Amino acid sequence: MLTASLTALAIMTVAVGCGNNTDSSPTQVEGNMSSGEESMVSISDSYDNTEELAAKFPIINSTPIETKMEKNIQNRLLNGFENWNRGYEAWEAWGDILYTEDSLYNVHGVKLTLKEYQAAMDAQLKSTDIQMGNFNNMIINDDWAAIRYDISSTARDSQQSSDGSVMEFVHFKDYGDLLGTRVVEGWAGTKGADFNALTNFQTDEAKAAQQAALDEIINTKIPDTIDLKTKYPVTYPTPVDTDIAKKIQSAILSDFDKWNQGFDAWTDWADTYYTSDLKYHTNAETMTLQEYKDSVEIDAESTEVKRIRFDNMLISGDWAAIHYRITNKDTKTEEKTAGDVMQFLHFTEEGDSLKVIESWTK
Image (cartoon, rainbow, N blue to C red; front, side, top):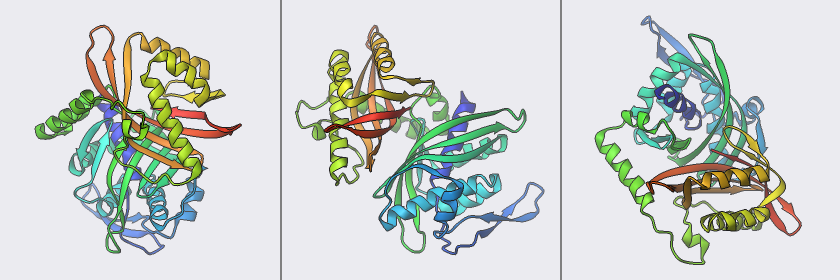
């Protein structure tokens, strides 16, 4: 369980980078080898190499990237992939120039300080080679990014490999000419079975604060209002300023509300929200609309799930990425816990309506 957690930690690093060198050539950073000898590590640290790196790490489902901040974020993500794939020393040197001391990383629901995160990474990258592939999605809106990408992991001792995909939400900040565009906080993966193992990296004070935050979600009362924006607030809102974005936002909020009304209300609504040829991807399988409905009905027999609020709702073009909080109540014991969900949604026009044609959920 802890090994899986460390792998999740390793996965997260690629999206949270920035350097302060604006020259188009790679930065040479002095690093220390295990023998004590010094070596020069080549770091990709430029704001001018976006086109070059986008050819190397294709963005499969691209959406508009318009402002200078959004372009800087795209560049930092691409440079992060490039440096990661150069090996541990390159990642370590890249990390020395890209993070602030206050950067935070939420990995599978556990909030880690930079030092806690780096300690776990130091162990993991020495045992596992993780290579980054394509960006399946890169949705950038204002100072936020949501990404879904491919990875390939190989254990260094056994050489056993496996492929997978990752979802992340990352908050950036422009620190000015001296420091550039850097990450404030990132979220990689959702709360899972490895949650308790990951909390071992936290201090007792941090654990208590995190439990208090979970208790707050568990005890949240959903407002009794027909104003869905008030009923399901977004903690970190980003602009929703185009006609299609407003329609997508409305559809997502309505989906939340129908879900919370119970299975019968939601299953009728699902025909309005999803296309008949829906592809619904989870970690384990890809389901049709009917198969997805059936799975929801089966799960509802043992667990009542309520959708509480959004952390994020990023909308760009005909794509949306959402990160939201839920509560799970065991229907037998009535024990209630808090969790979260990450989802990428691709919308399409069907007549006068917008519907989800494909969804990826973790």
